[in-house]
Length: 478
Image 1: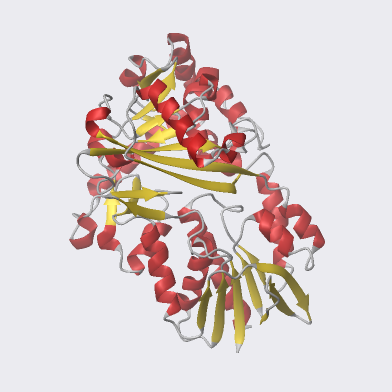
Image 2: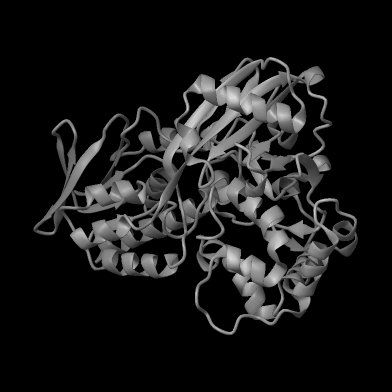
């Protein structure tokens, strides 16, 4: 019987295993999934404490990238979908020490409505004029990659970069716009410029087209009546997706999931692989999926392909931490009329962003309490991830005191660290990944998946893992 070994039990590894079984349930091959830690899920981690639901890592997925929702539906979790509380759908930006509303109609960084931008206290009048001039900026003539920073300055101006694009990118990707590849990180921006000659013109057309399609769509029935917002999650937290996947897979024939099974090396001989665990155990395989960070994959592949191992190390990572902290509602004077705030680098603060979790999603805190999640580290302040729990909580309390005026003792505080966990799609990423893809394709039976290659986020990881599973099935059918 043929065997597939999957190294890594995060969402990428689990969804690859599920896809193998889903597309070929009666296939006579064995799946062995190995996870080095004592839990599955990787960066996805949900905990409950005293009536609070706390997400350590990601807290949602994007509905416009359908793969996470589609997988959840196939697992029978559609009735657990939880949309955002959109009556408070605002984002604030810290500027000059005060919180300012991100103007309505700004899609990521692209303004699509005149009046909200004109009356915004966030952007100066010269900055607003420069953003409006985007309509007249000629599109780039060549296809050479450029940084997100250069792209935004060229199209929308420096103030739009400093006060909108940079903090939003830092809050989501923990990255630096001056090194991020716009083609790899935000290909839709490049597409808008290429097709419409203007980000504003292109986004307005896109929004109008979406509105027209929505109006002409047939009336929803049954499950389709569920409200779908830009950000979606599961009522009991994202770990429900992990727990459901691992529980279902564990019950399937010829499928073995192992926690606490760190892999030390990977060898190839006579067309087959030997996966060696740190305890000395060896597992033979006909195909191997490495669903670990690129730097971890590099260590494992030294004995298989030295050049590939070295190339994987050229994908940089940053470390992050989240601090979830709860207060009594009566002790928080801010109206909490939004999803949270982002912090531009120019403000020189020690947090990147904060989500007002109990406002953004229901079922996250008792009615008389508020749950806030702060983001630390990334490309801005990587050294802060090394603080011990007490020092990090103290620092976050000081920041929330300065920004939101919260001085009360917290009801609880929970720190999660993710060291070297966020891949950075820096300039030249597409060329690097193109080389890696070609190299891996030339090594029969070896596959890579995860967020380092073709999209950061839960949905992209699921999509890419499903494509890898199909490649393995094709290999076995030869």
